[in-house]
Each structure stands twice: as C-alpha cells, then as structure tokens.
Length: 102
Picture 1: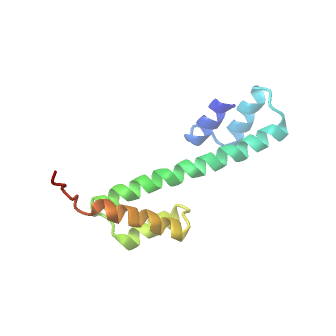
Picture 2: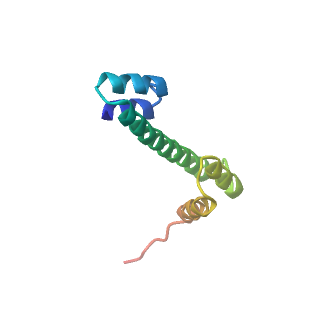
Picture 3: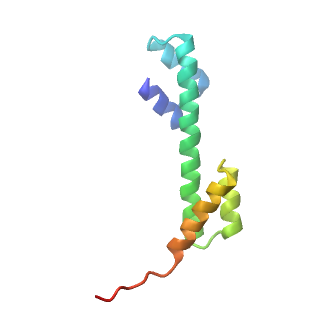
C-alpha cells in the first residue's frame, strides 16, 4: 500500500485510482477508506511543507514581507501562532552573522 500512498501524495493518482489500485492489491473497502484518509493527511502535510519552503525562499529573497509571509502560511493551513513562529525564525536567519574572535 506504501507505493499507492506515495503515488497519491505526489499527485499521480486521484481518489478513484487510489481505491482501484488498493483494491487490486487485495485490501478491503474499509481498509482502503482508512488508507485513503491517511494518504490525504500525508498529502496535506507535504503540501503545507512545500508552501512553507516557498514562502521562506520568497521572504529571504525579499520578495515578500512579514505580512505576506504570515498570509501565505495561513493560506496553506498553518494556524497563526505557528506561522508567527516560522516568521520569527526567518527574521533571525536574516540577521547578520556575528564573527567570533578567538
């Protein structure tokens, strides 16, 4: 079932194809529905992480500012406190590096 889930997560198959492929592997209708829920959750997580990566790149490059960064993450499904935490992390990364004298 792992390969069917991966194919779903990568957008290679839709719900109907998922059901068909899992059925061909011998899974029951009940098992297929549970695995489809799992696949959807994993898809949503990967989608949000991809969106986060894109927002980080845009923020670091100066293409978007603080408000846009928060807006992008909340549109991707992040709750506001978590989006704000990611923003703070990116702000810190933009700070100049301190050279240590040894």
